[in-house]
Length: 136
Image (cartoon, rainbow, N blue to C red; front, side, top):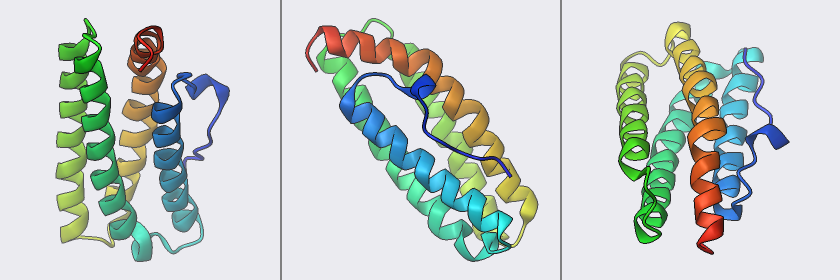
């Protein structure tokens, strides 16, 4: 299973954004550890529901900061968020229907490790630079 660990490579240097990202990564690691311990099916719905709820809240807050600060890349960023939430929603539905499916948990891992980390390192770093310049 994927190991999720906070590192300086994921730092945006915006305290609020970094705190949220750390918590999301922590929960993703909880799922990965549970899977490695053979307890993934017991925790998969709980962690998936948390991720879905928290990610939506995080994205809304991040988008609000972008709008308030007149971030030029807002539309592209919002589209990226919408895509991720859609993928996560669909995966959560599949997990809900079949929480014992290892394939679904692996897909969740893939989504988080692929999209989320890439998003942080590319788009969120740029947003944070802008927010930090505008004192947000």
